[in-house]
Length: 260
Ligand code: NAD
Image (cartoon, rainbow, N blue to C red):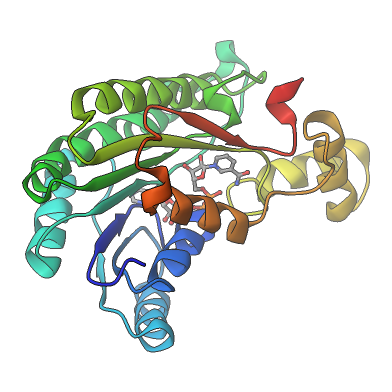
């Protein structure tokens, strides 16, 4: 379905980003990986993906807090693959604290990585998509792009901002062959939420699994984590021709969290 197309996926060295990379590569898409981590482990990931799916997989270590590196990431992707067909803005971090205790440095980092980085990637990638008269922008927002939770001032502000950015870009690109959508996952078991599960387990004096169940019970009516594979399938659908008229949306995949 995506043979010959290319996808740039930020924060794809683990978790949801890596799951989306696998889903797109499985349909023949060439992939630009990005993210932090041990260079040897990332090289193994890269070569394993190439081997498993028979596509071209590159890696660029741009730090999403640095606009110059983000510009270079987009340019290198375009030079490697002859364009940037699919852009998945996925890199993200979390910090939890009450607003009066929230460290200014964590606020700035979360806004930079979870929001501003997506502006920069989109800003540089849209001209490539316009030239191709086709493009898919998929912003990995969150249920926290639609509703709030306590102790997440920066994360909720950034994700609401990302949903707004998604809509503006959809209006500006409407009818051009480019679509812009946000995916809004609920709890998904990745490294990002492990500290929250551990904190909940400590608070209740229970083991990690019971800590996870308690978090689900509080927010996610299905009582089940969203899987990385389910997120990959949704991203894939947004890349299909069936989704040509889906633009400017924020799609919850949250076991009913935001229905409440
Ligand atoms: P994760 O920690 O596994 O992945 C985060 C990725 O971002 C990693 O690849 C990491 O290297 C990268 N990253 C972090 N800082 C970076 C930087 N400065 N520059 C470049 N890359 C950087 O966590 P995840 O859960 O897979 O998160 C992916 C996205 O999904 C995030 O935007 C997150 O907010 C969102 N999300 C996660 C959940 C969940 O429950 N896990 C729910 C809703 C939304």
